[in-house]
Image (cartoon, rainbow, N blue to C red):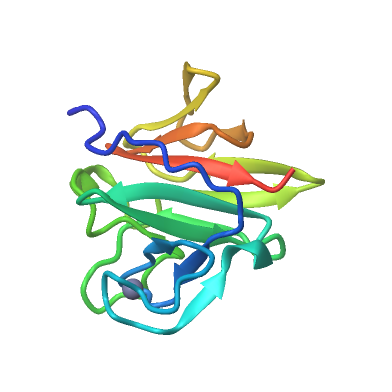
Length: 159
Ligand SMILES: [Zn+2]
């Protein structure tokens, strides 16, 4: 298993915008009018969401918004298949990501990640790594770093 390819923390404060293009999802400053990556003008405020995952792709910040009312599937799309909510297919290291690797849910005001795969899932809280066993789960707290297969993401929630 290689180390996570992406390791730059993109700290979210929920004042940003996100590109709504499913294949883009670039994180943009709150006053942006156009996505400087794809040229799209369909942008939405991150403030509409209670939590999000951030990462980078070729040094570009990317964000996946999470909803309170619906579990988010974290995985890897395949051609012709329905893409998961958090689609890691285009990230380096995606070969180690299952189609449905994990699910993130909000349960009784606590965020939790459930491991549905067999390849690694790791949660690092305050720099302390903890491997989540297959079929196991772990609490997520704002600022935690996740390793899904070998893709790294950071979890942030509105406190
Ligand atoms: Zn875009």
